[in-house]
Image (cartoon, rainbow, N blue to C red; front, side):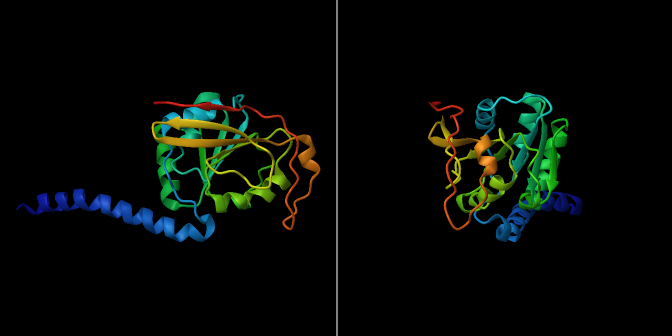
Amino acid sequence: MDPIVEIILIAVFATPLVVVLFYVAATVLVLPLTGESIFRFTDRALVDEILALVPMRPGQRFYDLGCGEGRVLIDARRKYGVHAIGYEVNVCAYLYARLNIWWHGGGAEVRFQNFMHVDLSDADVIYCYQASGAIQQLRDKFNRELRPGTIVISNTYTIERWLTPSVVTLGHGITVRNIYLYEVPALHATVPPSPAAPLPQAAAAPIREEVRGHS
């Protein structure tokens, strides 16, 4: 066989393996930071429905904590014209997000940074798809930094011992997701974080409560 053909064939078959190994290595390296949370794709139709739950105005600040491939950032920017910023510590996901945003015309931004070390006080809407253990770490951070009126969207996992969320169930075939919507009320801004005792639940009016299904 021609050596050039051999090289091409090796490259074609080896590239997917290299990508998989890169992804696994990048995920393992950041597990001490992300806990149970790993880079996962979110269905485009589900992203559209999640963003439709919280209408935003152009120029508002939208943060995606652990933005993965950047799909939510891209759609939020395209749909509402918001200033969309994502944070990601998995280098594989970060590079994928940068490429994905470029491919879709730019506009959104992704930063290779631990969102626990970022000041979120200027956020208007925050989206996070973090596993149960990881998202609990955000509770006191949200309590310290978020201003009244800030909306937090949590995909699948509830933030225990925080505010009372509105819950929207989105169904796609056999997949069903609970989306938890939190809105920071004025009362919450005066409550200091207390790791030793449950945080009080503020009486915030639900944003929306409904169940949606798709065959």
